[in-house]
Length: 249
Image 1 (cartoon, rainbow, N blue to C red):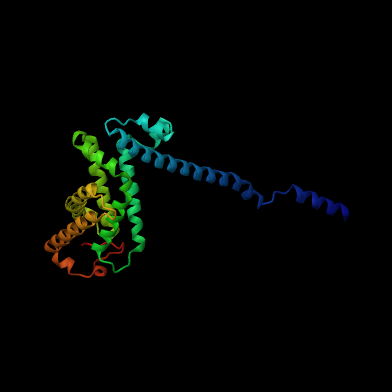
Image 2 (image 1 turned 90 degrees about the vertical axis):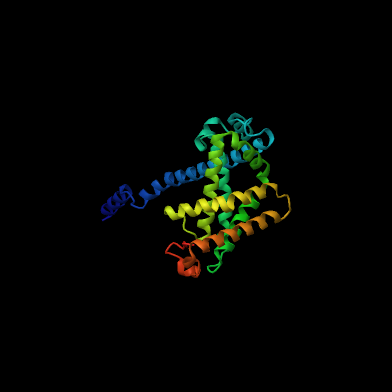
């Protein structure tokens, strides 16, 4: 009896515990996840630092005098690390615009389902203009330089179009398809560009001139939309929404 018991104990010790297998694998998985998270944080930190330093140098030195090596030195990152995140200084400008778009879209959290589209657009764009204030001098320099630099000009138009798409989509207006493309271009030409010009010269503490210009531009856009699509604009917002919450306004 005792021998049988001893043998059983020995066999139990040599058996592999099924629960030990996933535990053994969990350690490297957890470590990999931590490393991935750390890498993502590092990349985000590099992007943030490069964007901030690029715009600072553009303000101080001008667009044409700012070089990638100046940015990498100021941001304390290698040129390899820069190249992993950006294709050049123009792509840094686009990344800066994307950061503003992300801040703009945070306003959606305060929207009520029955908020008028016009009010949503006003809130979204004013949030973006307000967030861009620390970069006003750099944006002025970019606007001055764009007519003499085709790549920068194209970059600026791309950034403006992206902002228009995000604003319209954030307000619940459809931007896909041929009609959506037309809306984006009309919004960019009739609202974003003229109001941005006013914003560049607005030194008031509360951006009063910008708010007035935006209010008027949205009035014109709303009037034009009603003239072109009266049947759509007479409908209530909730009746126009599709499954994704977008509106054909």
